[in-house]
Length: 304
Image 1 (cartoon, rainbow, N blue to C red):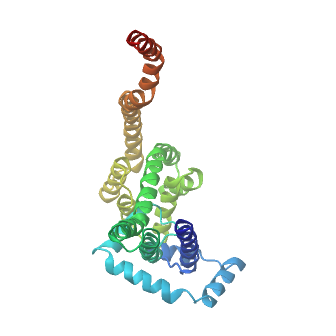
Image 2 (cartoon, helix red, strand yellow):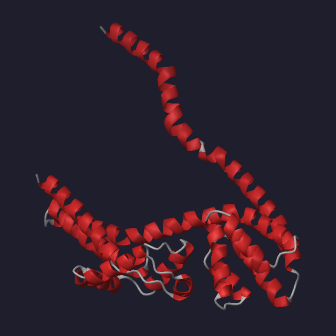
């Protein structure tokens, strides 16, 4: 009965967390805010959403208190670290620093209360409350980091195709900004979105070198950092962009082939553990099992 009550409390708390975080107003900052102001067009959906957010203020005091609790319990520099991780994850619209802090506070309270309800207020319950509360508190950080890692992998995979198209467009006579626009429209995936953001930053007043330098700061992929560094140096030194792109495309193909060879070499090591843990025991049972049964029967009958 206690476990059933704890499960109901957990479901209710999760539903409250979802409703609470969905009620938190999200506000973009920095370049993303500037891009929204440039490209903003009010629609019926956005107007209705803003009116609903203005009317529904019942959960704001509780959410703000939980967010302040999460901020006080977080180490220094957590906001900057979350901002960098969100940049690597592509700044999803549903994930802002304020919303993540609110979810961290809700998760902390939820984990502590659930552990105490299920296990009681004894020593084991208090230890479980501390452990489960800490796990729920740091779970949003892990989710954001995981999103950023997956997105960086997709960007690394799509960079070669984007560079090929960029090189072809520049060598065909298009301007560099027009070539970036063509890549942003044609190439799918996160790399296309990053090129679109670079172009938008250039259009709102950033220099080309600063826009690409910001792209290098938003990624952890070594290939993208090398490409950005080459473009920034070419722009500052006045080198022809077409030659730089051609050389970068060649290097990218070599790096892509080497990465594929590296992954192929790791297969033999990775397959060793499933082989030892899953295949060998079943093989031993099939081969040695009948002989072991015969030996056991022989010794058993001899003993009798």
